[in-house]
Each structure stands twice: as C-alpha cells, then as structure tokens.
Length: 268
Image (tube, rainbow, N blue to C red):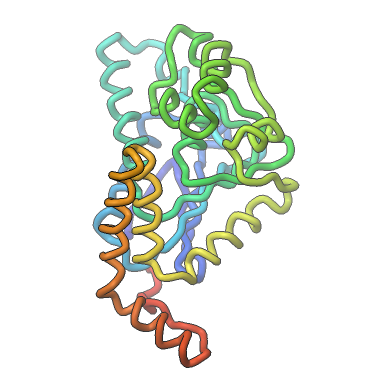
C-alpha cells in the first residue's frame, strides 16, 4: 500500500496489524471530503489486497476527540447540490467500512459525535476511554444521521434506545455505551490503544481466511432469518475446508504444536 494520505495516518504493526489514526487534531478530527475520500481508498483497497493485514485498529489523533463528526465549516457555504454530492461520498465511505473483510476494532480515545459516533457503530467492535462521550447530534442542526447511523446504531443497541438518542440528540457516556452494547470494554486513557492492539494481535494470530469468513457470516447472517443465516454459515464454513490453514491447524493440533497459519508477507 503506497498512498500519501493527508488526513489519516497508517502504521503497520506485527503481526499483520494496521493502526489507522484520524489525523485532523486541530479540528477534533472532524470528517471532511478529503478524509472521506482517503478512507474510501484505504478500505476499498482491502477488498482487493489482503496479503499483509489481518486486523485493523482505528483511533483519533490528539486528546480532544476521536472524531467530532462532519466538518461544518467546510459545509458552511455549500449549495443543496454540493451538500448532496458530498454526502454521497460519506455514504460510500461508511459502506466501505462496513464491507471491509478485515476485522475492525475501534480504540475510541475521546468524544465521538455525529459522524464519529456513526463510525463507532460501523466498526466490528470498540473499546473506549473512561471519559469518552458519544452523541448523534444531527437533529439539532436540521438533518439526521446519514452515514449509516439510523441503521448501525439501532442494530448495536436496539431500536428503542437508538430512537431515544437520535431523536433527542443527547450525549451519553462510555459507561452507558458499554451497558447498552455499543462498546465492548472501557480502559484508562493510557491503556486504550494497547488494549485494542492486544486484541488485534489475538485475531491476527488466527487463520485469516477463517476470521474473514466468520466475520461475514455473523454480519450478513444477522440481516437474514435464522434458516437463511444457517445456510449462509455453511457456505462460509465450506470456504475454509480447502485452505492450507485448515490442514495446518488439524496437523498442529494432532502433533501438539503451535500452528503456522498462513505465514503471509509483511506489509511494506
């Protein structure tokens, strides 16, 4: 991956982990058109090139916010047409995040408002600092969550709670987000990144094809009825049978040794 990004930072970490940092700290890592385009490039590339990354950790630069949402200064003088066109970019961005075959883990280091909260809902799972706060504020400025928030937040925390938070626009705490199911755990600020990377390492040491198929089976299965979900699970399972990882995993178990699961090349 050889891209010169302006609004995001990427760092490759062993074993096969990508750390992605939203990097507009002067504006609380607010999303603008440039950042959305760069996230699209990054995430869509993973649909084509999976050689070197098995898990991704996402966080924000600085201490003010993980992401304060859309950059309203950029939108100040937009016409209705320009606003609509920009929002199509945001929609493509969140679809790229949701479609990413690699497990995505949020390390939410501070506030996640508006589009930032929508990103939290789009990741596979998230950890946050004790002081992190969340909100879908869109109704307060005359719009609604439009980067997936009405769908992903409701799936994460349930319809009734999502309606309460989206229709009021009121902030909620990390403790509440954990209780309601938006977060998986809470850590002190100086531990959040290492905790997320630690879980990413656990994932990265497992069979990558199996991890991707399991992620897909869970996500797509939840959009189906149980019978169809079970049928899709069998299809995903069958894709793991002819892999070298499946054969290596069985051999290592019977030989009482640690398996070497797809020793892919390191990222450059």
